[in-house]
Length: 300
Length: 187
Image 1 (cartoon, rainbow over the protein chains, first blue to last red):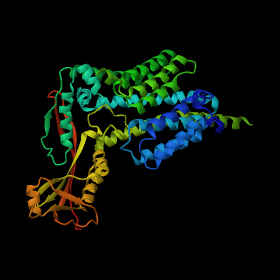
Image 2: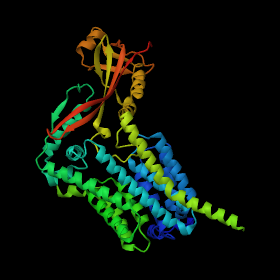
Image 3: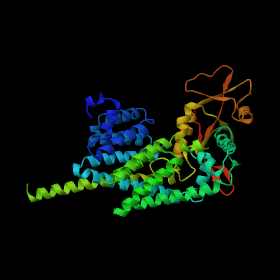
Image 4: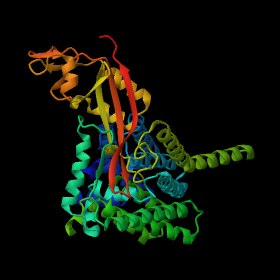
């Protein structure tokens, strides 16, 4: 996009943004937009504004996104944040940094090899990230016992709508449990021997068990199909499962940053001629954005 | 171009392609394994740090709490820190390794605390009767306000706890994961 294009009406700029030279450039532009919306705009004293300015430059001057140097600089900004805030940053920040690095590396290749290399990067990054998520769930003493979802359905407000809708949890139950959590945050209250009975309606257990097994099974299968060598059947299974994962998971737990990163990678891994699947990924990105407003809350 | 030069160019190009595809996945795996090691060794939360352990355990950052105590002649007094300490406390809860707690304890030991002398006769009375209420921390160099006296203490104790949940009993509890006692150096 040129300086003249910036002066064009908004809709023309939007069309120009969504009509890049090829799919790699579209992925790059969408990644710049995603970084702006979900990653670099959160925190970081100097690096936050630097990341915002850099992603805005990529969005406004779309051709920047086609350059390896642009993504190398973006990766450096994200890497510096990781070094400074190693234990504070969410995992989707790391995943976005790897993705940004992959874009930089792939765009340094000859043009005819870029799409395939980016697709392979997406395959490995997605497969490994799901694999580690599954390993953690197996290793965690809280997860396979069902304790994690049992606890989170009443402790984390992202799950409250689902708990109310499916498990019959009432606002009074949630308020009681919330009091427990806020009480231990009071600095003068002694903690030795502290234990409190939570209000957990009977409908919670089957829901927690269902979520526990659904999540680990779908993540394990996604890890498997993304790490298996590519055949036509395996590739179709990859995209189908990843989209099912996105449409089911992010309705309940709308973690936009992670979800959109996964969808960008799925899009990049999709062969150019599979247009329907690519549109499904675009729809999934829109869906993840919309689901963050709390779609389930309209039914409770 | 000679055949050798052409072969070298092809080899470099293949190597370039190989690294372009392999480098980021290898970095992801290395960071994730390192994060696993750190979680096991230093009790950092699996939710953060690039290990992809989110949504696997109830040990997430808001489920960790800290306690700070002043110690005098074996008696301990819980104290409430104000918002100035929030960031340091958040870091300590996320990385509760022994060295971090020792450093935090040492830093906290450099602060002075005051109590209203109309309410308590001396420091021993504060430790015995106050339960941590009615005492305030002063900033470095801040003068002691009128009507208050400096609290005498020998050491600082810091603790980091995490939530637990017994699914069979439906009971939430809390478990100590790290603590440190730091003797106060002479001001």
